[in-house]
Length: 596
Image 1 (cartoon, rainbow, N blue to C red):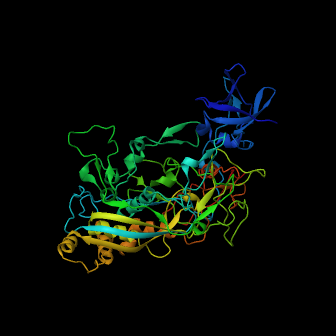
Image 2 (tube, rainbow, N blue to C red):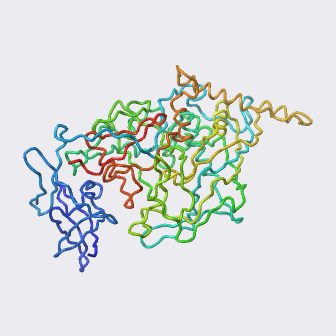
Image 3 (cartoon, rainbow, N blue to C red):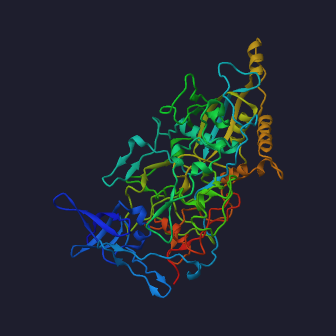
């Protein structure tokens, strides 16, 4: 039977109607009968209200109402003590589904489950800062009109090597189909080699630099002052505010700087612009921006086109759907305290939510994924397991549905990517960096073997792992430059300051964050950052949470409905939190429905 489309409307009382267009150009509201709304819609009524759904029409009435592009799942009936709740018509004639009463003593608890996958993202903790620290605290930016005597200036030549494919889309050359699906070619230069903007490299470096220096958040706006909402299990059609906002849980020392004397290390090195510089009030002579002390030169592809570019014939490779951020999930985003540690499992939704005395988990990162199935990406191998005993799947590709590729406004297709092993080079130009500021940069450019930064798009799908290495450098203090320019000739090569300044950075971190047991690598945000760069070492696959019919691990779902895991996680016996990155054991696959 042909499907029709309409807009889902939900009244305050919870009654459901479908709004459809009439032949005369107006709209009409139809009320579906009992049992004719998909369980996937019932689970997300508040989120789907006002959005388009699909349904079958029988004798003028909507039947089997489902999400657009989804399938109809018969609604389950809820059991209460002494009777069975049934959906019933309210006074307006709309259908009002039975409401679940969340009572722990009347629910069969789910068994304890072993972790079998890792979430694509986790967090590097961001503890409160000592803004008075002489090196990692807040200070005004230094002048840039002279070379300061005890500060470093010069250049650093860097080689960047792709470990996994890189997504560098040509947004100007994108094609959009009538259903909103976009297809992106690879961005290349006149020589056919990948063309990577210096601004993208700069963004990657700044995000990493913020994490290892525990600087202020570069992106955290006024919008975070709004309280997030959550849906109570016993009142599924009503959302209520959490007690406090994300802004309130972020320590003041980590919020974006609002004055020139509040610049943290990342602000001083990479530059700063006041959040409301264009729209907010400004006193006479007030500085609302500061130029950074680091500049990224042009990025050159060193590899040949054959070794750097892999192209795909049209219509290209359909990528998996990238899940939208879910900050309302307090189990993932809210920390036990301002130190950023994970909450315990088993808390109710309200207990795990945003409330006074807690904190945020920190800076979101995407750990390096050691396992990938990058060969033959045009073939749909998403349902084929690889590896034993742990099964891995082709997670980056969207599975076919009914034998047909899925290309719509929920995902994107690509016509090429940068091959693993492709090499790039660029120069970093620095001016007047302190020993600690330079040491942090050089430590970042010389991470231990097996560590990778993340670059470009598709990070949750495993794309974008790159290795950075210093090939050469010429960095000197102002005193050294003065001596060089004052001599008749300069035949003495510059001294390599790497060991000295990296040690200065590590000692500053240990001093500022009072590590009692262990050294630099034991500082929580350093340990978590290194774990993200190395990736999880337990062999578990990495993918968005998913629920299955039997609660056992399986391949990516063609419908891409990752929300079902979060619905299942609210049941008694589940309620898993995202654990600390350093010792994250992973998460379990959950059954879609309650056990009977």
